[in-house]
Length: 60
Image (cartoon, rainbow, N blue to C red; front, top):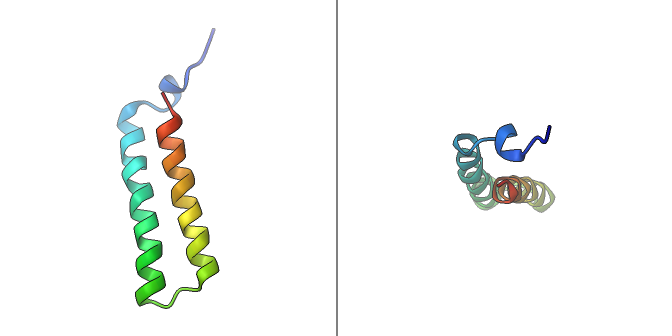
């Protein structure tokens, strides 16, 4: 029995992850600019958002 990613994470869960990833990346930039977040924390938040974005895109 073959398990596909579509069965694991259907599209109704992929699209919110896609937009949440963009929100995390934007929040990292805004926190860096207005709240004085350090550059390393901004990079970590942006990397997390980018990984979420890749996760939502690569699923079939």
